[in-house]
Amino acid sequence: MKIAKNVVPSIAYQVRTQDGVLVDEAPVNQPLEYLHGHNNLVEGLEKALEGKAVGDVFEVRVKPEEGYGEYNENMVQRVPKDVFMGVDELEVGMRFIADTDLGPLPVVITEVDGDEVVVDGNHMLAGQELLFSVEVVATREATLEEIAHGHIHSGHEHEGCCGGHGEEGGCGCGSHDHHHDHDHHHGHGGCGCGGHH
Image 1 (cartoon, helix red, strand yellow):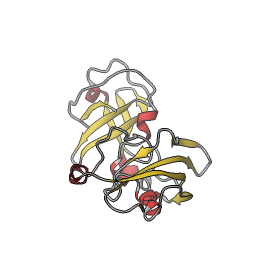
Image 2 (cartoon, helix red, strand yellow):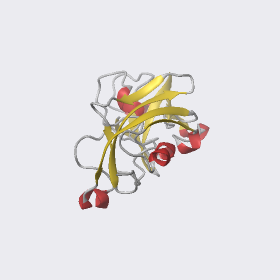
Image 3 (spheres, helix red, strand yellow):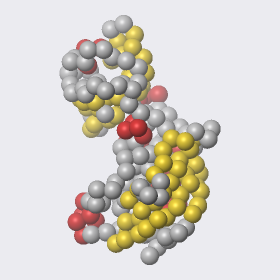
Image 4 (spheres, one colour):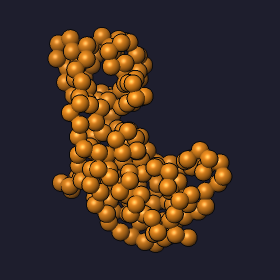
């Protein structure tokens, strides 16, 4: 079965930055399973998988415009510390979900300066060309329910760098990059940071 819309492929992959740094992977024994054709992967990778079949092994370079978008300076905001009420100590690297006019947005603290905090809503891989090394491990037909919902229901979804919707932030690599063990839930004024990512 060739990969096409409404097929559920299982893929093993590694993704590296242009500097060769490994940022995410799914081994053959724990592949990523996703619903093809529903924007569940970055655009450049999903395009490259179209028409592939079990056993195919390939590499693809994904440019920022078909990956996590270009770096956008407007996504960097300086906000008052008090929007993080309930958090004892704010540190660089902490991740939160900000409530914005466009909906929830994952942000990371990049600077703590007195009573102000700088947060960055860019995906951590924004502006970077990525190299994916991929092997198609399995394919199956999607269920009607999966097609209706736009994602799979088998419980084998992998929240790695493949996931995401371009500039929307996706589920992204943040799930692999926690620098702390706190659980933050708040949303008071300002950027409306509303929960730890």
